[in-house]
Length: 172
Image (cartoon, rainbow, N blue to C red):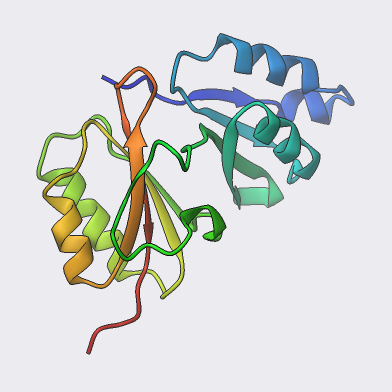
């Protein structure tokens, strides 16, 4: 079973005029293999994106209530060890994911149902990132049938499958 994302809320530190970098780095060091970090901050921490990329983490960020930001840092999906759909064009060049789904605690077929439902609400070219408890072998043909591309792999400890789905053109 995959570890849930570790949540770190640095908003109180920032509101008191403090610098949260040390707390963030301590949190990163305490993460389990393949574990993500969910960071809550009072601003979009752009300088941290490069620091975390250097440590092997991708990010998904979004503005939340009150102008605060939520950033999910996930271990980078390595292009060399990723499974890729036969029609995928350069997954490393895909845009940052628009949606994030943590479905690792759900039993089949629920993850497949939720991924497919989410893809229906997305625009062509957008990317979805999902964490699953296992390789979604039955999902791959469904994604292909709908014209979507995908890339994914198991985390280093094999506890979670990381999946990127790039939405294809609308089929009419």
